[in-house]
Length: 243
Image (cartoon, rainbow, N blue to C red; front, side):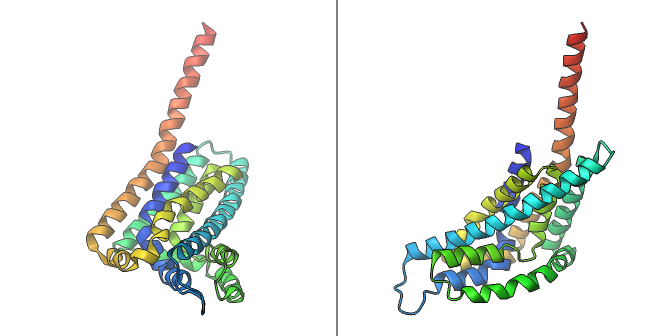
């Protein structure tokens, strides 16, 4: 399932612009806004930002674990040998919908993000108890809460986790997705103006959308390729044993 981890990581990388839109403002405010009386320090800013993002990735990993468990249940109940391919095809379609949404052709993000809004309304108020974010532990816990913010790209990565069919692979898939978002999220505080300009740049949006579509196509394609390769290898071995 290494291919799923690579795909998830690449999805995280191309999600930078969307992540800036979802979390950039609050991350810049919380991480760069030093508590009163505390001397501003680039190292402290970086440490808090890293703690926040590690908390966010931890929540993604937990979500991936449960998605993997659900996928295992589905694959266990299904008598369809192509159930795994069906799940990855659904994830691919969601990704294509999100790519079209980036280009302004689809309302899919609003639809998918509305799914988790009920849970988010229960979780969001807990963050008030962590203000001010003046310690690494508070930043970590705040990131764990913010990791449950409804996000269409996170949900598409969760569908990929679900398609792995195991808890640990689902967890690792979401962890790799989170790691893919890390470079962009860690630099928001330092390059927020540049990243915000990228978010509205039509060429950048087309490149991002195109990469997402390529990732989407690679999901079912990789499954078909590796399954046919395994079948060929198994057939060759059986033929050799027969002789």
